[in-house]
Length: 216
Image 1 (cartoon, rainbow, N blue to C red):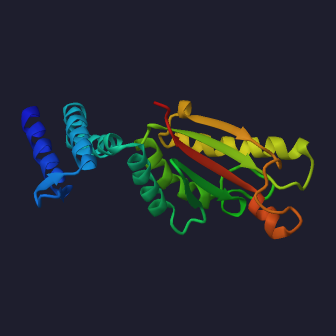
Image 2 (image 1 turned 90 degrees about the horizontal axis):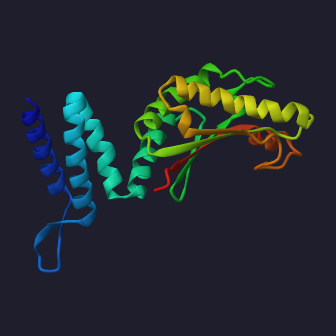
Image 3 (image 1 turned 120 degrees about the horizontal axis):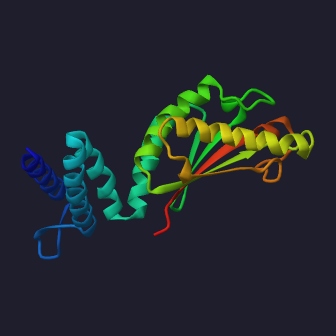
C-alpha cells in the first residue's frame, strides 16, 4: 500500500513538472530550473509525508517542501497569497517587504480601548491566519504591540506587551509553536503616523506580526 501511494505521488509530481515546462532556444520543451527543483523537492517530501501521514500528509508535505526547494521567495509567496485570502475583509493589513510578510492588526479590529483581551473579530481573523502559519513553519514570528502617546509609559508599555502576548497566546492555541515566536511591547516609541490627530493616533495603536524565513 505504501508503494502504491509513493507511485501516485511520483505520477503527480511528473504532471506538475510538465506544467513547468519552457521552450528553449532550439524550440525544445524542457523543465525550468524552478520547476525541476520544486518538483524534486515535492516528490521527496511527498513520499515522506505519505509514509508517515497518508494521502493528506503527502499533499501537505509536497506543497510545503516543493516551494522550499524552489527558493525562499517562493515559499514566502505561497504564504503571502494564502494570508491575503484568509485575511481579506478582516481589517488586517498584509504587506510584503522583501522576504518578510507583515500583518498589521489595528486596535479597532483587535481590542477595546485600554484592554488586551482579543475581540471576536480579531479571533476570527487569526483563526484563518493560524492555519497557514502553523503549516508553513520554516518561519519565525515577531509579534510587536504598539500604542499612541496618550498616557504615560507606565500604562502604555505593559499594555502593548499584554496585547502582543494575547495575539501570541491565541496563535499558540491554534497550533503555532511558541518557540517560533518572539513577543515584545514597544509602547509609543515606534509611531507610523502623527500623534497630533485622532486618525494618526488610531494608526499607531496596533499589533504587528512580522513573518520571516528561518536563517539557513
